Length: 227
Ligand SMILES: [Zn+2]
Image (tube, rainbow, N blue to C red):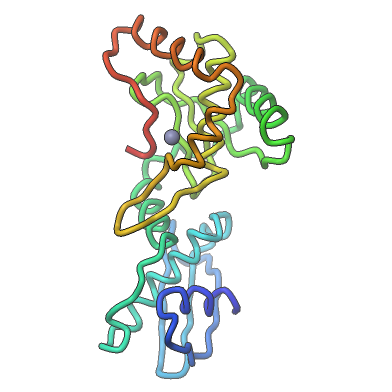
């Protein structure tokens, strides 16, 4: 179980993991449960089957959170909280708000294919693509755990390039994930913004978007991420 050792040494680089470890997926848990049982020599980690489809970084974050529970002694009191643990916590916080799996919508598949060809050489794996509520304060969001982009239904009336622009923005979240420092998470990093600007006519579309949202009598609109 190489990845467990990786998970461990990220938290405690100075220590060595001496336990014999097994990891099993179990159908007996509901939802996203997991547990760990251990003796001084052995550790058994059990995850519900639902974890199988979840991003590996988030699974590592889960395992790290379990390890922190196991190693409570003084020696392990101080550890570097990893951004994977943060991902895991955010995943759990948001899992309830994720729409049940549905078929990706054809209009959104077309939009994704356009931006994938244009900006990612067609190399990005297609996430799940769903229409959400017609909200104007959040035009799109990306959910790491289920690899889902949800687009506000208000964009159904918008010009295609606007739809594509928001789709591109959310795809960049899939590409960049996020970075974590001193207890804060950064989603829209410099690298992210730089990528975002490479969208054709991005400044013009930003203006159009403001106008589009303004017409709908919303004072302030912005892309938010898991708010
Ligand atoms: Zn964003």
